Length: 108
Image 1 (cartoon, rainbow, N blue to C red):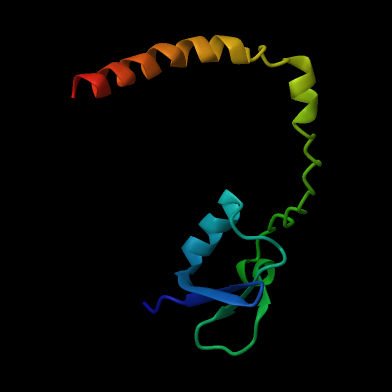
Image 2: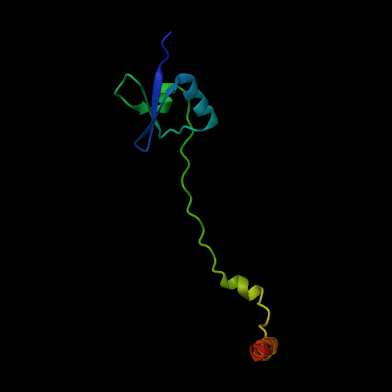
């Protein structure tokens, strides 16, 4: 028994070869759409998949534009950042470090 091999074309890109049972499985799973074309491997004539398979095929999904994302500014207003440390408190932290290094140089 000769198994017919089928080529599929979607957006001018060819896929295959597939067996007719694979084509029917693709249709059942919603992989193929009515905008896809098929041809027998030995033929030069492309036809809609549903004509070759003699089975209804799903309509291709229409791409939906994404909603515009909101800027991060609205999140910042809802959660204000904590206050930063004052300059005086940061000076107190660095002062002992400076004194220690001065002591080290005096011992040498």
